[in-house]
Length: 531
Image (cartoon, rainbow, N blue to C red; front, side):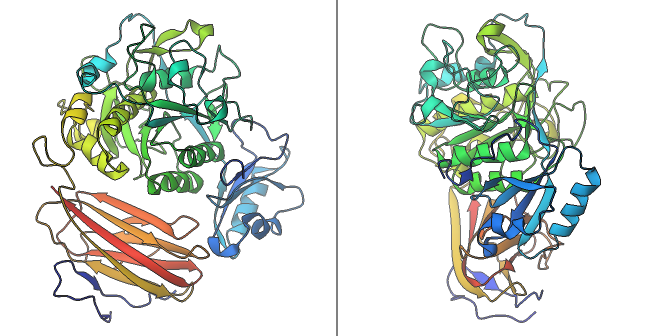
């Protein structure tokens, strides 16, 4: 592999170039669905992701749609369309379409529009008192801050009963009806069935029921709540609805997105959505899943690198028996028999269990920390990990530990509270280069400079009318490729980010910038952080 001319190698920051060509709407970009499209899970639909080089995604796909199918929905931000088949069509008809359309130019992926579900386990409501805020020391943190409506937490779920006595004062007024409904495709995310559609109201109350108002329960933070209704009365929803809810939340000012939902398998559409949110500065908390006892069973979207996967603890800080575990778990929080708001048809307050309940505890603590500190989403992520408390569980069970609100609001992320935070020291370099077409790619290496590296962030900013992808290898002295890599980010455009915690610094970091389609200049930025 021939060396290229490098930047001034006498500089302390060195980005060495080692590679040559590798060879070979009203809803902020979300178009309203076709009238009559069924709410909730959509087993008759196929999602098709279209490369940015194709221009209009619907036009690129339309000519390949068979006569018995039609395009019923599009998301221009994530560049996908939904193609529906009649209910009488065989599963093979969908599979034939997927196999055929993925061979077409500009098509990045095609996949069934799978189903995600709310992640909770009903429990006997015998506990009359809250314990979750006390377990994460939120009551001590409130001496410093109760949180603020300047911070927005979006609850991507079944919709909140936003006129609830303990939620009405917490709802964001930046949007009509405090949110958006992607299940019924309208502007009112109020639950349709208050007897059965209570999950989002419970989750929202944990994160942000109004504290110190003399009513009901205390949420973790007095942040402003947005409601993105993506799950129906059964607690289920489609990949596309969840992806649209994440996109909408990002475009409408969410600082934190709470996803107390999950699926056993991943989705390119869902992955693109969390990447879009993360790249736009959003902190993403997601439920690890309720498949325990098990090992290495974290669901999606929690398993994506962009998301903070949250496991559940019981009142004694033991792992809840239902909680999924795995290497993706990043934080733990109380999730068994958690008292919170529920819909009025169910008595306004009840105890529920699940990683669904643990996740908004983390989102609420994130809201408190954001009110106290001016930090980015990546800095916030490192800060909550650094200030978590070890409760004696395995790393695949608790991640970095049980989230702690008091530590989060009293420890200076810049090191003023005792030092040792990831990002106290950092070095960064940006290079600019050009790819000539789909056959072209560049391989780069980064020589580690810090003695205590805790994180590396690789960012790609490419042309708007092309589709460039990003691949990274760590700990192996060889360039990655589109089919052989340790980390990858390959959305339908040229804006990609990869963050690696505690990277292997035994060899240089290898980075591939690959053109899936198109040509143009790009900027590649690598930021190495230390404690």
